[in-house]
Length: 186
Image (cartoon, rainbow, N blue to C red):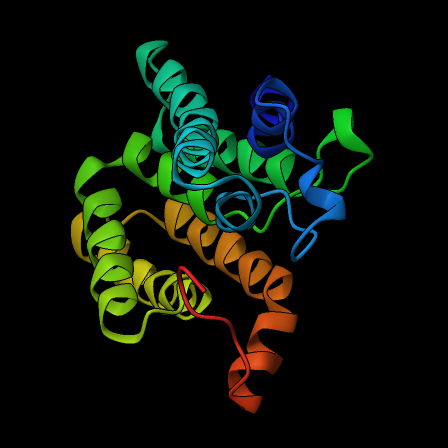
């Protein structure tokens, strides 16, 4: 169920509802909030960001409400995250996973989620590069997990999601190395 919820592409749905072009064919071609910001503006991007976070948060919260242990919550988080990256409803062409990962982190342990979001905000403010902020925030998230919820299953899940997030950002990493990565709002 978490995978199916994760497979709902907020970017594509928001763009269709707002009469915007399909984000997979515009800008970076990525169905995520940053690309929706480029093609549709702040309102569309904010709705996309919220949708992507909720599809990570809600399955994890439901697992918690149903009494699932941390290992099942971690598996639920990974399933929702994989749904975002490889959505069954949209030809397995999904986003890069940043907002969905933030949502699952908030669901698992709100302090870990807030620390990761705070890290993203500080890096984004300093460097004005969304991908750099995401990559650095995700890099330190396992430390937050180890500090606040030292659970092996959760740590493995967060590292796994981080590795996939880095894989999905491989073009951004190349652009960062070259110095040609786009700035926020450009």
